[in-house]
Length: 305
Image (tube, rainbow, N blue to C red; front, side, top):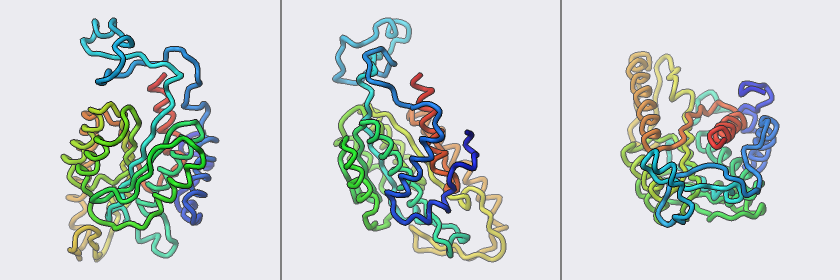
């Protein structure tokens, strides 16, 4: 099955499922059908991989041969130690409420709906594998948060947090990420679902703080097709979601400059993610979520193998 398979559900179909937990279950069913091999390892004590040494690790597990070759400290991980502590961080700022005009009558998914469904689906998958999963929704601050737990019944708490009413303020990435770096237990996978529309310096400085605490990092950079392709034609009024200003214009006069600016934005996001060692994924809000997750899990499986 390929990512373009018709067996994957487009977001407009998922939008007809009102409850987030049911949307997530539908996505997970598609993910499980799309995976040829589980991305999770079993519970043996065989050597699995190296990871970079972080302060507090047992020095007896340092691979000194690797240190001799690379002059960097790595420790050995074994398969019975690979259950994740997964923390899902969802951007709840006002810009995440963008919805294409074509969906105005059909109530398609906003970027936030897409990101929340993606996070809930990852939570379902993680809990089914015995991983500890937590989540937080944020804008200027964390507005809803649930600590990591392993019980499958914990999914209801995670979904409830993702469905909390939002204040829809601009994001303060640095304050939120710094707070998480100071409070989250070490050695987890932190997944950020966001449009990254904010101070990029602050975003990646905050992510670097998490990396320094030993966390693995992944970004789902969720953008709408309209933001990536700028398909508007004819007189258009653009309403600000995080700024009070509106703009009435002929979009054809702006298209070339806008597309150049969005391309620079994406190049910067990718390069900064690479520099911070974040697993970066650009996601169009028109992509089937189950397909996105199949590719994500398969890639992580390849990296671990």
